[in-house]
Structure formats: C-alpha cells, structure tokens
Length: 83
Image 1 (cartoon, rainbow, N blue to C red):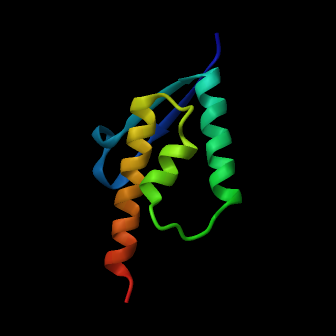
Image 2 (image 1 turned 135 degrees about the horizontal axis):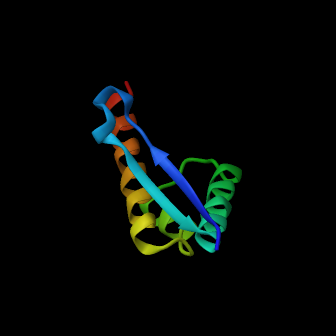
C-alpha cells in the first residue's frame, strides 16, 4: 500500500512546530481533487466553512476538520488585515 506523507513546518517556531500527515492513496486523491476543485472555483463565498465541508466531503473526517479550521483562521486573518 502506498501513502502520501506531508510535513507542515513553521520554521520560525522550530522543530516542535512540525505536523506530519500520512494519507492513504484514496485520501490523497480525494484531497488533490478537492484542492483542484477549490482552485478552479476560486471566488468569494458567503459561507467558506460550508463550502469547504462540501469540497472535502470525501477526505477523512479529522483531516477535513483540520483543513477547515486552518482556512477559517486564514479568512479571519484576512478580515482583520483588510482596510
């Protein structure tokens, strides 16, 4: 069985700020498909959290929740820094 391993790093916080994710083949393909769909439909949305849940419907629950939480934080940072 093949897996896709992704390391998320935050070099400013040192080695302890590393998160490793291992996806089986089906999950990696679902993630890639969701990313491509998101890029293809890049547009403002009224409810980004709901849209992400739909895009990541085939991704394992814990990974999808993590990705949604990361995106929610990103949207909030964008709102905080906009004029």
